[in-house]
Length: 172
Image (cartoon, rainbow, N blue to C red; front, side):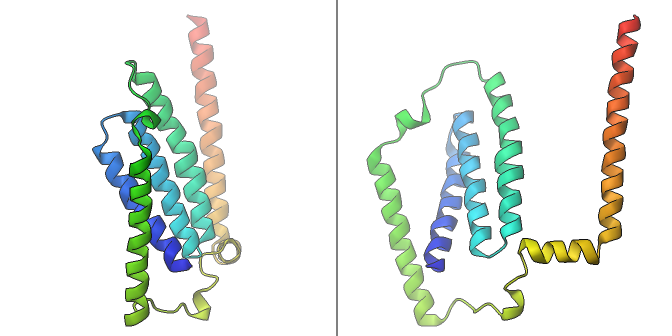
């Protein structure tokens, strides 16, 4: 099952990246980039790196893509065709069948040649949130606290600069 999931997500990531490059519509390109980022997050989940998958979805597919789409929508003034008007059902079915057949080929090759190595017991918890938290709050606690203080000072400084410019403009 893991091989099928990995193959499907890998083909989806590659297909969405190629589609993102080949499409002329900027909104469709951004949506295909979101699909690519989500498929990469799925690959992280298959590889048992839950924290990376969560950060991938929250930071990249969530926050940054909202900003990209906001800017694209502001700059894109002319009307273009909807992405869903262009898609035909036969292309979707053909793509899904191609993914299934490609997965079957990879599965049969992996079973014959022992292509996929087994994961050692030491690496089972390498990408989990618990393992990351354990290392972060024990070995790197000082660096974590210094980063938190630095970011807090940067936010306070940005607020003070914004208030200074606001009151400075009011005096003019």
